[in-house]
Every structure is written in structure tokens, then in C-alpha cells.
Length: 343
Image (cartoon, rainbow, N blue to C red; front, top):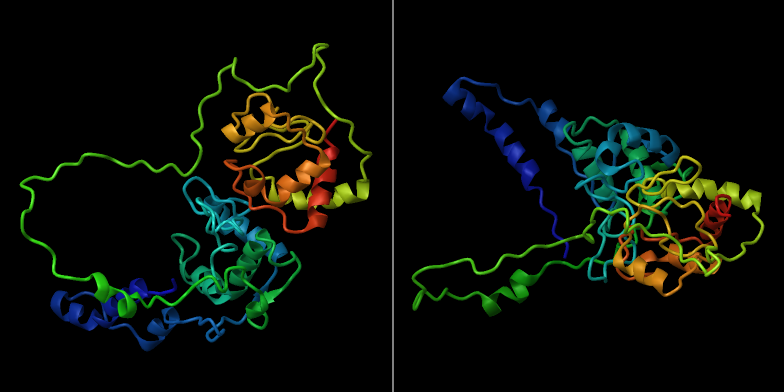
């Protein structure tokens, strides 16, 4: 249901408008000038009216985002702590636990630009230049695989970017069509003398993470000879792997790879291709990954491709919030990059 409210802005405007009255009553302040009001009074409409004049691409936007946004939203728009995720979640809105991000949920480009320009960064609202606004929005769109990194977003082409959930909203007409059916005078008879809380609800939005003990760390299944069960992988295509290194930027916020890699919110990805799933020492996997490992899941290139395309669909219950790689070429490239670090 779509219903935009500007209550916060209107409240501020009313306070400004009331400045002469407050000045008369308390001897504070002065009436706001028309120029001062105009500096805060703007609207960016779904048809593009009011769009700021400027431009920016994701390449420049990555630097601006890192400086002004990443402390809350993560280097890759993946969210930090309880701050919201801005990327991922596409095709999850019909699931029990949808991930609502700019890419998966927001219907209009104009709303994204308006919100970033009006309200961000947190604590310094309205401080972004128009070019910085477009660069940040371009980086968010790139993080959602909606544009390429060198696409120059501007007031001329912003509305040409198709938002995945553009048709996912309806007009809220319940006041006209439904309210009369259930709005009646409240019953005020035979009321209880006292009211007591009999139950409390606790909502968990992630699988609980427990501390791993030394005897509960997961290791690959071994055969009777003591050798880990792995499969042989094909030779690495270096050119494709180099391309995959760029795609891997989408994964770096949660996963590390290489000689000095450490487990983060996701496990390290060394020795992944051709090896059993959920086999990293010291990482506490979700129940779904443990079950997949017990069932004998081996990360062949084919299985990895299926998983990276739609992780939540491939493995129900996974803690991985990434919505998946939309392009088959990107999937092949990142798998080839992972093969560089697999033996």
C-alpha cells in the first residue's frame, strides 16, 4: 500500500511559520525569510518534477558512500549492526522473512533521490551536493545490480532506471472500501476488573548465534584413510578469474579470501570449490548448512552456481542475506575467482 506522508517536514514548516508568534511570546528568534524556507521546501515527484540538477556514477559514489554512509550502512550497502541494509533482497518479498531494501522494495527512483538528498547522511541532513546525491544513489543501484558501475546517473536519465518493485504497490483505499464494515461503537459492558499480561512475544530476525566450543568446530568429513573428501576441479581461466575478482566486491563485506583471511559474519572462502559445504574450522554454521553437509553436499561448480543465483531459495534457512547474482556471467566469473584459492 502506498501512502506518502510528509508529517515531519510539515511540522518543521509549521514551526517556522509560527516563528513570529514565538518571538512575540518569548522574545526569541525572528521570522524565517522566504529564501530560508525555499532552501528546505522542495519536492521530487514520481514524474521527475523537482529533480535536482546533477550527475554521478557508482565509481565516484563508492568513495562518497565510504566517507558519508558506510559507518551505518556498510561498505557494500549491506547494513551495519541494526542499521538497515540497502542492497539485496530482490525476489524475497513473497517469502516469510522478506528483505526490504532500496533494490527489492522501493518503487520510485524519485523517492530514493529525494530521501538521500533530504535526510542523509544521518545527523547532517541536507549537506550533500546534488552531484554527491546522484553518485551515492548510483552506488546503491549498482550494489543492487540495477546499473553498471560506469553508468552516469543524472536528472536526465534517473527515471529510465527500472525499479524491480515499481508495480508492487496499490493505493490505500481502505477508508472508503473497508472501514465502514468494522468500525462500530466499542463494547463497554461486562468488562474485566483487572488486566494482566499472560504472555510475551519475542521476535528473532536471524538464527541465534552461539559461541563455538573447541569440540564443536566443524571440519570436513574424512575417509578411513584420513583424507578429506574433495573432487577435482578444472583448470583456472585466469582472464575469467580476474573478472570475478571485481564481482567478489559484492561478497567482501561478509567473506574474506586469501592467505590472511579470517571468519567474519560469513566464513572464509578458501578451499571452497570442490570441497564439502560447511567445512571451515571455527565458524558456527546455521542448521540448514549443517544438514546440507551431513547430507553430503559438495560445492561443485554446478552447485555453487545454483546457490549464488538464489541462496535463500537453494538453501532454506540460510543466514546469508545476499539475494544472489542476477547475471550468469558474474556467477561463472566469481566461481572462477574462488577456484584460485581452492586446492
